[in-house]
Length: 147
Image (cartoon, rainbow, N blue to C red; front, top):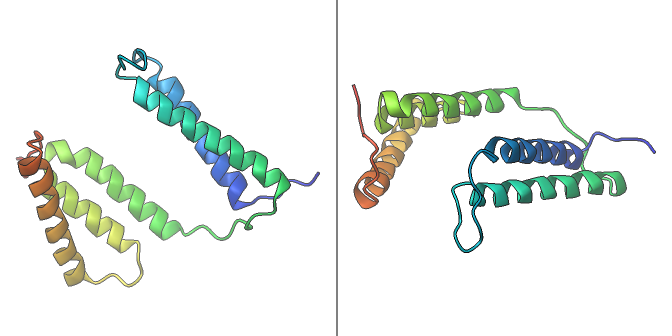
């Protein structure tokens, strides 16, 4: 049997690894029962589901020829990851305004047709709507700006 590097195989391995990591990492939280769910119950169910989907994809890749793995777009991958990382770091330190704008600008830089004015309008609109929903609508303790 010849192992072919397909998108199903790579995606399945990634899902399985991520699900297994989440199960192991989340094992320190109590599960509880279905009637009285603990803080680890829902993450455990999602992680098990992700792992099972990954295993199905891996097994499927052995029997069904899927798409061949193409070229990885490094620019979008790096910019989206960098934007997400910046958002996670700066949301508590600088607030939603700065973190959201950094995330959106970084994600838009992943596209080769980056337009600064279009991106800034998009960022301002999305951050304003996000702030309205989470801060004012849901009363979550997120600061819009922090110094």
